[in-house]
Length: 313
Image 1 (cartoon, helix red, strand yellow):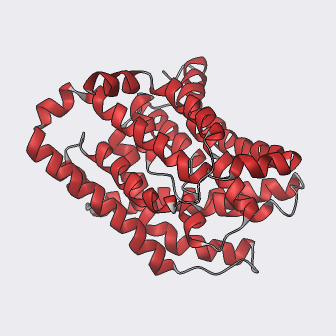
Image 2 (cartoon, rainbow, N blue to C red; image 1 turned 60 degrees about the vertical axis):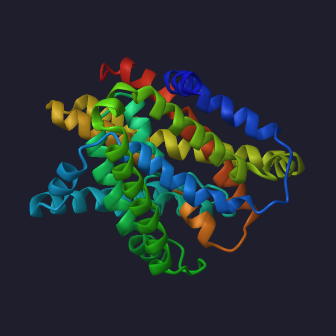
Image 3 (cartoon, rainbow, N blue to C red; image 1 turned 90 degrees about the horizontal axis):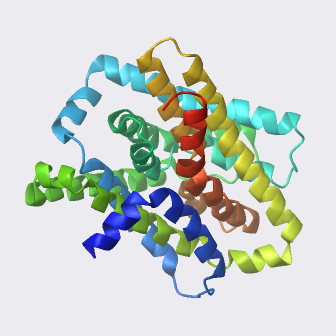
């Protein structure tokens, strides 16, 4: 089993896209499998937190100047970027039926797995984790506010319910990581990092099962709509990443390059599942949530090459 985990960890950039293909051919099930999503997200947080010096991370995050810095970064990701992305959609005359899905994507915080993706892309984990935790705790409040501006007629959702759900997943991941560090020891964890990469890869592959359940059948019924949704999700994701990678390329300082590179990965890959679980069932948004996994799972493979072409790696 350990050999398999190490192999998956070392080949995660190829394993993740292959998982999309497998998810598309899995048989549909009526079992209530959506319930596995929160535990899987908690595990993603855990395998990311377990590599870190957690007391130092918490000390840094609670410094007044660091809180202000993180709030400014969160404001960029959760307020400024949604306005830019949805403004771009309106200028491009995106199909009105797809605009709500694009908006839910734009106001969502970075998905938890982006921290691990940053690890396998060689980006700074601590920077990514600080941003993910802060945006995840703020997004349940900024999201509905931004929706009221962009889509006044959108379905209302409970900010506190989302906040509690996200905080619970972060806290569960943190507790698992602390227990793991106590049991395994930091030296062993560092020595066997590929095994934790493999565990993260398996968790992300399992995540595809509930998200893609029933989607292939829908895609065959409305192939043109499925193609439009896939193109929209891909453009939203990779345009955000490439623009911020260009900012990283132009940054005069190494610190600026690192921050912009991390922001690129985090800003492009957002936790649309947060709203997928909170909103009433919507076939278009369900399909968007599934097909959005395509650019997300391709990010390590493709954006690592983009970074090299830009001279950032």
